[in-house]
Each structure stands twice: as C-alpha cells, then as structure tokens.
Amino acid sequence: MYSLRQWWKFAKQINHQYNVSILRMLLENIVLYCFRGVGPRYYFEAQIWQPQLNWHDKLSYSDSRGYKTLLAELNPPAYRKISQHKVVEKAVLQLNGIPVAPFIGFFHPSRGIEHNGQTLNNRQTLHKLLSAHNGQRIVFKLVEGWGGHGMSVIIPLEVNHQLQIKDVKLNTFSAFDVWFSQLTVPQDGLVLEEYVEQHSQMARLNPDSVNTLRVWVKLVNNIPQIVGTIVRIGRAGSLVDNASQGGFIARVVQDTGIIDQAMSCDIVPVVYQTHPDSGIKLSGTEIPFWHESMSLAKRALLAFPEMKFTGLDIAITADGPLVIELNLEPDKVTARNFGKSLKQLLDVNAN
Image (cartoon, rainbow, N blue to C red; front, side, top):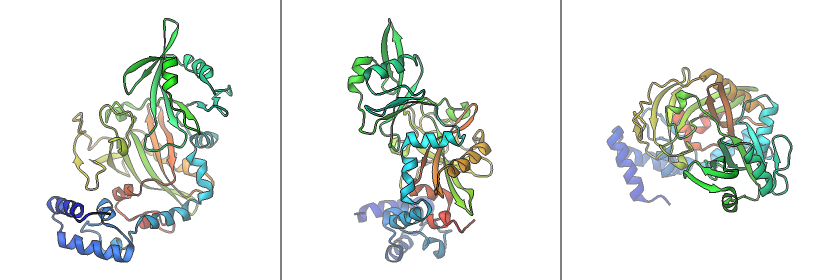
C-alpha cells in the first residue's frame, strides 16, 4: 500500500523541481485511480503528472493488468518460453544469422554441452573446458535469469600447472576445486559465454560494465518499427548496467543516436549531466554503429515466431552490435522515456 507520506514526498519533489501544483496532482491521481486503476506509484513513475499531457493522453495510461493484456495480444504466452531460455534464444538468433555473445557451453548435470558438442556436466569436464580458456574472461549466467542477478565473470589461469579461478568482481583467486565447491548450479543449469569487449566509446561511459542499448521494437503490419531506445550505464565497480544493480539510463535522440539526457531510475529521477562516479560528460555522446544497431533490433524480433514486441539488449563492440538477450516483458517503466503511454506506444494499429 502506498502511504500518504510517500505520496506527499514525491508530490513535493515534483512541485519543487517542475512547479506542478500539488492539488492538481492529487486530483489527477484520484481520477486516474478511479477510472483507469492507476495507483500513486505508477502515476509518479510513468510521469503522468507532466503538464504537457492532456486528459486524452493521461487516460490512455492503465495499471499493470492493462500492460499484461497488451502483452498477451502482442506476444502469445505459449511462444514466450522460446526467448526466456537463454540457450534456446541464442540458438534461434544464431540460426537467423544474428550476432550474439559467443557461446562457450551449457553446464548442467545431465544436459550439459560445450559449443562443439562435447559433454559439460561435471567437475572434470568443466575443469577441462576452463583450462582451454586460460586467461580469458568467461561469463556465467542463469539460464532464465534477469536484471544481472546470478551473473559472474571469471578468468581461469594456469599457475604452476594448477588451475586457478579469478573472480573479476571480487578480485579474488581460488584453486579450481575450492571455487567449484562454492559454485551454485541452479536446477536448470548455467550458460557460459565469452565476455563481450565493448566499443571504446561505450566503455567510456563506464569501463567496469558492458553498457548496453535497451531497444523497444514492435511489429506493425509485419514490419518491425523502433518504439524507442535508451542506453543503460553501470556504476563504478559494477559488472552490469541493470537498474536493479544500481545502474542508470540515458535517453537518446532516436534519429541520431546521440545521448540527450541521463538520469537515475528512481520514481522521481535524478538528472545527471555527467557520470555520478567518474564525472565523464554524457550528454552529446554519439552511440557508435547506431543505425546498424537499430537494424539488428528489427531483425532479432523477426527471428521469433508469433512475437510482435520485445525490449532487447544490444552491446556494441569494435566490430559492430550484437544481441545480448530479448525481453518479451520488459519493465513497463521504461516507457516513460518515450513520451507516451504503453497503450499509445504498443498499439500495433498505430504508426
């Protein structure tokens, strides 16, 4: 339950920063809750309080159930599992000639397999695989993880004929046997990928994380269209750029691929002119391979049967963009960066 104290806190903040009447926000919130089920939190998160929105625009917003209904129309639930499983998703993308982070293996006690078809299901086979990648960064991911949860990056190193494992995040070294004894393997296994070395322009935003594009794409009359794009940027010391791990976002001018404004992912965002840790200027930064990235996003959506909408993550290397993963139910709050309600953005009958 959203407390009156929380509502008052955010209303005062918006009143101070944007000079929007608190009484106006209260009346709007009451009307939207009564007629559209929009609660106080989403009223602030989606920035429905903006004065430039007329009542037709404001009433096009709805609660989470409305978003679920839209998604059910766009992406039939029976087909969503194809993209939720990272091994299957990667296979479908590669089959369609779409570049992805190179697959090393799938570690699982019964189904485990390397990229070359060799078994990868126990301590011995994993030791052999990691020994063959001496000195290389390897990413371990949950098969159906999200938000960077459960991800780790290691570097296997042969030291005096013994395999050592460096945990990149913790900057610690362990003998392989010690590391393996502490490795948590979920029931559905782990995906192993090569670490993506990002383009120098993207690394400039934050060198510790792979900073990705989150691109919303929808299918209209069988033609993919870009709904909008943001850049996700990590914080110093973080391996991931996800908001749930402390990252923030930057809005992009869609026609040019130039960063317009960076901000936190708070309910009432904090605007950044520079990176809050490094001080690097963000506004005006040009995203490399911009048009190639937009083209890749469209192709990726077309690779999955019956799918009409996705929010996908794209990393950009020195050689061009590649797909990290698709999200068939991306966080609805991202829509606030595209200036319209979810209904307005995702209506396939609208251009």
